[in-house]
Length: 194
Image (cartoon, rainbow, N blue to C red; front, side, top):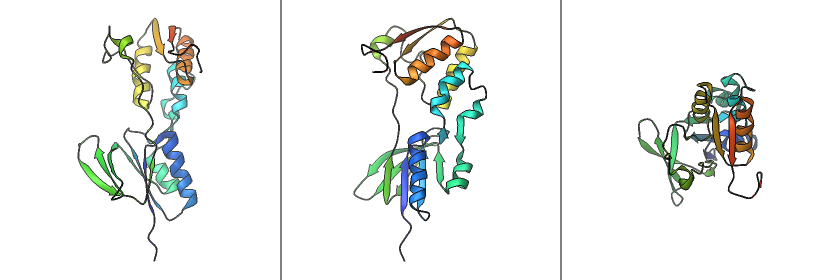
């Protein structure tokens, strides 16, 4: 009897959740495990700027599907708060760390899909004066990030600098202007939306 394939997916949100859904469509029998470092496995990351601006009024509208829904809809084993910290390709296993407890364990795979996303660039020369760890130097990649930004904007600010003139940077700038914040946009390249 052939064993069920074990598919591990590193990262949730748009890429990882889409890969998990596609894997499920291709195999009803596969054991599919999604590891997501953050607290939410599937959220509308493109909606984050619009929550800051108030066009999306309810925070819960950002959550596409929680762990329970993903398990119910697609029979996925979703593990939020877990980070894959190492890959042993020869033995086909990954090292997984619980972000709260720090404990690690090994998980075997037949198929490994990597969709960890990216970390925002925090340009040191621009942040040298205030410091990259200043509480008003914020990035936007996740729901906890948008919570921090919205709290600052809701607390009342007059101006903001948005670094990055791609889709998200322009949407954040637009939504801050919508909230009556004076915005300066900084882009490294000679045009926005390169």
